[in-house]
Structure formats: C-alpha cells, structure tokens
Length: 351
Image 1 (cartoon, rainbow, N blue to C red):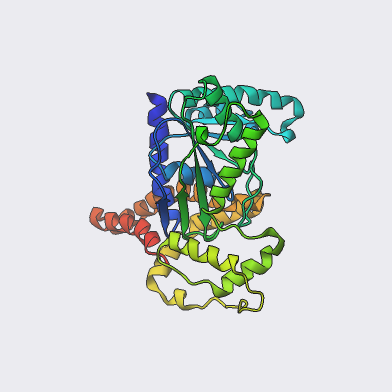
Image 2: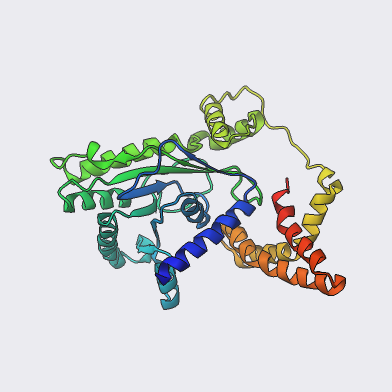
C-alpha cells in the first residue's frame, strides 16, 4: 500500500511538471491501450525524461527497465524498486553480469503473468538523432519466455510507442507521445519456429510499427534532410498532423528545394511585459539550473531530463520563498496569494 501511495503521488506530481515543462504535451492513440500483459516498446532520445513522459501518458503503471549501475547503492535500489524499476545489465557492466539478466527476464515474465505491464526502450540507449536505431532483443525474449511458460496462451501484446520531441533540450517546446496498434505476439510467432526466427519476427514487426510513429530520417543523409525539413516545414496546431507532415517532407527530400535561411532571434519578446515578468521571477532557479548543466553534466543528452527534474524541484521552493518575501513586504495574504498563483500561470502563458 505504501509503495502504491509513493508511486502514484510521484507520478501525479511528474504529470503536473510535464504539463509545465512542455508548451504542448499531446497524447495520440491509434488504438485504446489494452489491458492484461503488455510490453510497451518506445524509441529512446532523451535520457530518463522519456520514461517519465511514457509513464505520465498512460493510466497503466508499468515496470520500467533501466541500466543496472543506478541500482548500485542500497538506498537507490530501494527507491527505484519502489517506483517499479528493474535493472538491465549491459556489456559495459562486465560480461559476467549478463547472466543476471536471466533473473530480470524471470521477474518480467512474472509481472506479465499477473496481467501487468512493462516499459522498455527498445534501442537500448538514448540518442538525439531523429531515427530509429536497431532494436535490442530484450523485449522479444521476455515476450517469448512469457508465452512459452504459459503454453502460448498468455496473450502478451507489444505496444509500440513513439516519442517525438520538437526540441530535445528547450524549455516549453512541444512533445508528442503516440501509442501504436497492439501487436498480439501469438499472431506473429509460431511454437514450431526456432527461437531466433521468432525473435527476428518480433523485432522486425515492432521496428516497422515504431518507424511510423516517429520522425525516422535516413542516417546517410541526416544533416541534409534535417536542414531541408527546417527550411520547408509547415507548422500545424495538431502535433500528430505535424508528425505526418514532417514525415512526408523528409521522405520526399528534394536537394534542389529551398534550404534554411539564417534567422536571427528578434528582441520582441523582451518588449512583452508577461515574458519579462516570467523571466525575472524565475531567474534564480534558471541560473542554478544553468550552473549545474555547465559544471556537473558531461553527457549533453541529459540536458533536457535534468532541466525538467531540477525545475520540478527548484520551482516550488522558490515560489514559496518569493511568496514569503512578498507577504513580508505587502503584509497582505490576498496580494501574496495572487502573486503565488501568478508564478506558475506566467510559465503556462509563456510562448
């Protein structure tokens, strides 16, 4: 019971923070998210912010798989287990540790056997580039092991999920989370096949589905296609329509078409009183975040994730401090209350 309270309290707080961090957070479902044993397989572009987005975008409470080295300390292990995370061992953790993945697979099979769900980032590690890398076999091995244990009658489904960031690092950028059509494992694999044949079938089917849910730019012409996209992109209000429009554009890349024109950011936002109000009242936590990112972060692909987490922690602290100062100066509960409410509202209205 205590574990559930901690999990759902943290999940709901993260949802609020996601709503503030992104200017638009759109969830699109090609089909309803199924009940029963499900493995959610998503692309991985933005460190642990991907997992937060995924969990906050659904009502289900999946167990998440993450790299094993974050479980090294007992306190961290206890907390991560409380929020339903399981360790995955990689070659870099030592060849001998890979045998521990058998225990992880057994744990996942047990979770699925009880009709619960699992979240896995199929590529195995994060990367900023807008294309799908080769999927690792882990999720397929778990699905096959679960079905084999239940004599191919468990009904495991794989749900591909695409996460599409408009910007990986920028605060108040839009993000789209798209849940694809469920893949019923038993519709594609056969007990008579070899294990490798079934693994290959599931890997290919899942990868094919995932590629339709994200911007999947040809790596061989990546920079050219990204430049072409930026130059010719037509902005849409609906983020799923935006994704489809962007996909069509990069798929029909025309190297003779228009290319990017250098754009200098104007000063008009500094003439906007609302922007100035938001900027001044969030200046101290923003400076702290910038200092941490500059001096403590070696992997730039953690930038967006740490911006989100640090903002989630620092913002309410400074809201309370600044509201207290406002009360000391004004002596009015009403004025202080209005000021307190204006702080998050200024973020929501930021453009």
